[in-house]
Length: 292
Image (tube, rainbow, N blue to C red; front, side, top):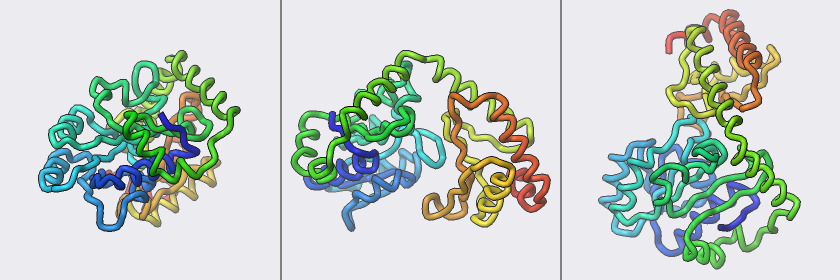
């Protein structure tokens, strides 16, 4: 395992290092910007988001060895990878499988260990995750084989030339991991909050996500509408950021809602009631949101 100062550095640095041994990167179209940042010019293939048939067709055409790159939970949509689908494809084509677990670490698995808690998790070749999400601190790690770790030690400038995070930060991270691991009630409460939030949306006649992860975007579509709704919510005392292209694809502007374990039922009810209030005061926005 290698420790980095940030998830961005871990993702970008490791993927850059893998390309120095002629691994061709094949990325999910919605993979994080830190992964795209690592890709050398002219050395990129992308498969349609979570479309494993498309991934298979791309790998079948590659003459170079490949590294397949995706996320456990996607940062803007909140949906997740299917290890049951992607793992056998990566293995069939002898590809290195790299997964960014930034939004799964601390959330997924019986003990919060992340995507590795999945039965297919042992087939992940490179796993990156940040301590800045569920742990609430900072820094990141890369879990991989001894050979890939040694490659990074030799060829990853993000690791070689960056100052390590402090011992105090390491102690804080260990304490956070212990809390995540031994307080499963926090993850249970988080799931209850996600379910409760989705039910509140549906009861208000609004569309909820089909997945049960904490990232629950409110899809709007038009950039101007997303900004207008975010400003209206802010005027109601709720700061909910409008996410627009190029961060997300054209036509998919949204408010990015992230549910936490320490949200109360009152917090969630207040959010949805203020959202409904904003829509009732803006017929154009209401038409957009209620017809989804």
